[in-house]
Amino acid sequence: MRKTSSFAALLFFVISGAGIALAYLLYAHGSVAAAAVVTSAALVVAFVVASTVKVADAWDRVVVLRLGEFHALRGPGVFGIIPIIDTIAYWIDTRVITTGFKAEKTLTKDTVPVDVDAVLFWKVTDPKKAALAVADYVSAIGWAAQTALRDVIGKTQLADMLEGRDKLSAQLQHIIDERTEPWGVNVVSVEVRDVLIPPALEDAMSMQAQAERERQARVILGDSERQVAEKFGEAAKTYEHNPVALHLRAMNMLYEGLKHNATIVLVPSTAIESMQLGGLSGITALTNGLAQEANGKAKEALVSHPA
Image (cartoon, rainbow, N blue to C red; front, side):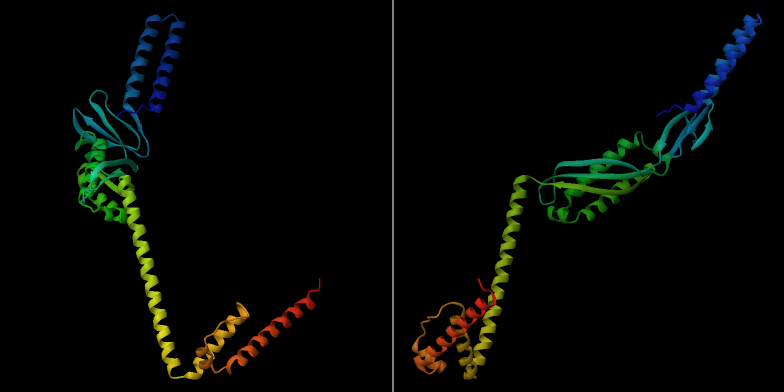
């Protein structure tokens, strides 16, 4: 790839302009032949100088061939070549370059077709090898990356590919770097951007994940019921050897039921006898006491908040 130097163009116009100006002065003094010679000489000199002087940017390295053989690596800055004898084979950019590549409908190790997109970050570290070892190093790097991606996909399970993109990127970087090192190219990093699977398989995986979450929820619920049953068993053992605690618990349950739900509760006679509440009169007294407590709270509310 050749690049036109604005500095070389400036030299051409300066030298040719100076020669034309000198030729004009000669022509004004009547030296027509001398003016023509000066004009021709100025144009030739300007062309030779413009062809000789080259300028490379800070990131460019220029491969110079002399009579078909490698001569030197020039740049950055101003440098010169010998016209006709020297030729510039490549202007090589040594900055980090990004190349996108992908693999479509490639089978994984468990025979699932996937589409994978990735980005390759690379740079030329040896311009001489990049120019002489491979015909088109940019195209060669792209093909090397694509074939490496297909090889890695074919050796990887779909689950590992979806969960471990960093590992997949590291494998690709190692493989591509080994292939491009003889070309004077270093792979900085590889980033796997996306892994696409068929829609039908995506729906099936979603249903599988949903079923797995439901199974876990049921297992947790069953474990909770088991723990509750164990606590009830421990409480039963406590009440078995402590009838007073059982009676207090029964009275508390009856009290809570009357307090929050209703003023009429149907209780079996056997439960009354076991609670030792004193028969029907005891329950009636308990109910009346709760009613009086409720009425007292209502009156207090009316006094504190009159209409």
